[in-house]
Length: 470
Ligand code: FAD
Ligand code: SF4
Image (tube, rainbow, N blue to C red; front, top):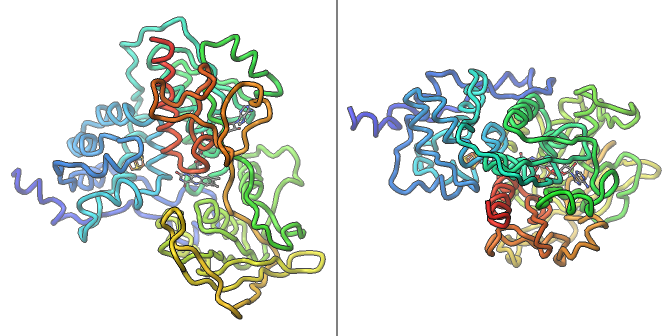
């Protein structure tokens, strides 16, 4: 029996949850994967070899106890699996949906070598989705409240991670966000076909029931000053993200018809959710020839949102090859299935047009010597210019940290690229140079991932607890 169990992976292949039909996907702003059924998830989780050295755990940025909860769910112990999963991750149902698993946990799975990795992400999603639906809630029966309270600025993954750890330790987190809903980029960035908004709203209710207080529509620096927070609270955590768009620095970027990725994506979410304040904010690409510039998650989201809005064509131009794209491979594959055309090794050098966009001039690149990060630098091939016709260009070159002006008077050190200095390796993890202020997520590391922001928020909370001696 034991032998049979161990070699389950030979009998049962990797099976991702099924996807909706392409035509449905191309028209709808809803998640594309069907949920696993109980029997399916048990079989899939059972494929785990429980190898002695779980590389998946090391590669997972929050170091989830992956083999342990795979075992629990394969045996039908769903609530225990959910409890264990929440010990390391504040947003397991979100990470299960949006992590680039192929580069993280599943990429490191021993079975990834020819047999097909265990479907770790989809199982993580299943555990929390199903447990919450069945009424499971985090066990806080042993919590003892202290008299401490902490102000958390930003209700994105970093702020949520921090608040989750604090509230479990009996420290009251008050989370401020300038937006009307929690989630940061989970709500106002990542589109519904990857993460439906109801998932974030459900998490909000769970957190509120745990004792986290959200004060939304409240901007620190405008509605409340940082000085007020510093005098009213025992510590402050900043998880404010990065919102300054990187520019290409080539001619034509200001032509009508050229948009930054985020306003395009956010206007789409606002329209779908009925949150639109001004109808003229909505950016429609219906019937247009769209060119998306970039190769990360944001670019993929622009591609797939354009398809769903009814663009005539969607072309994604990226300066490196497919192998070197920074985004999740799974999402590139999904974009291609939905009809996006990729042009690799194309560097934009100008956006052309008279009084509006008519096309993007690109030059073909070949990969040259590695840069300081070990990634091979794209170099232009002489005489290879061409113009890709376009009515709309969406620019998704990423974001740069842009700390707010009001931080200047707070003795918080900012490094030369705009990130907040808040190292993990020090007495109080993620403390800034102002002892009462901690920071984590994109505003410290630059734009990255949901799961790394959750990790930093959680670790910063540990730092705060040590600092407050609770
Ligand atoms: P954010 O999510 O940016 O949250 C910061 C919050 O702080 C915001 O809600 C903001 O309103 C608030 N805030 C800022 N200033 C103030 C202030 N002064 N007062 C009050 N509130 C303030 N990652 C993945 O892992 N997988 C993906 O598939 C993925 N797709 C992405 C798609 C897009 C389009 C984008 C833009 C990013 C994507 N990411 C993805 C990256 C991921 O969303 C971010 O790395 C993550 O959200 C960072 O979390 P954070 O908490 O640091 O910041
Ligand atoms: Fe994998 Fe992300 Fe879940 Fe970690 S949090 S197990 S990397 S899907």
